[in-house]
Length: 149
Image (cartoon, rainbow, N blue to C red; front, side):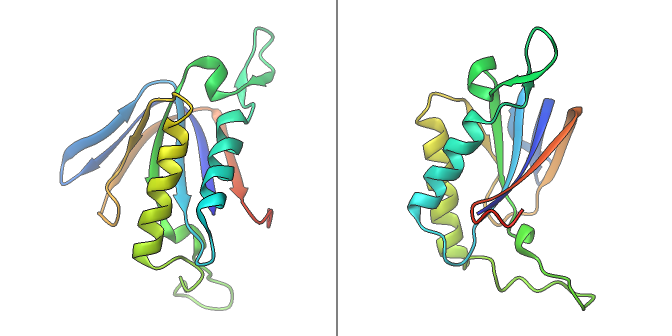
C-alpha cells in the first residue's frame, strides 16, 4: 500500500457536488492498494498511520499522533499513487490492485482505523471526487508498505 498523509485543520470530499465526508483537525489519507497487498498490509498501514507522531506537542515538536490529539481521518482511495510515468507521458497503473481487490482492502484499511476508535470519514470508491483541505504546517508524509520511500 501507498499513502500520502496530510495534516489538516479541515478537509472534505465531494461527489457530484455532495459532501460525503468531512473532518476537522486530523489527517487526510490518500491510500492506494498494490496488486499483491493482503489484509495484513491494510492492518499494518493503519497501525503505522494511527501512531505516526506528526502533530505538535506543547513545545511545537512533532511528538503526538492522531490518536493522541483525538483527531479524525478522511481516507480517500487513490489508485493513481501507483502510477508509473518513468520514460513515458501517460502513466501506467499496472502495479495498482484490480478494483475488486482494491475496494476490499481499502475497506479493511478503513475498518482497521475505526477499530482503534478514530472517527473516519471516506470518499466513494471509484467515484470522481473533489478533495478540499487546509494543510496544517504544511505537513505531508509519504508512506509505502514495502518501504520504497
